[in-house]
Image (cartoon, rainbow, N blue to C red; front, side, top):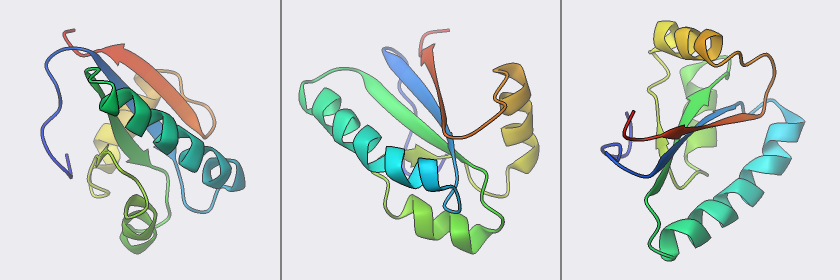
Length: 101
């Protein structure tokens, strides 16, 4: 995971998104505002960005705008497995999980 370790308690959000996706580009800043407010309130909350970008450069450019963690772009197989496990069929998608499980 780029950006640090994931929490062992609280909530983890898996954020499926991409730079080329207009709805994602509109939602990401709103999610970032909420993320920062939740974290500032001392809540155990972390988001991990799972990119649907076309290449590593697009991923890095988009991730630079985000205040949370990211699955490395090269982890395509893991990203695909997580998409399938959580039935992600479109983006943007935010899946919220209990960090303890």
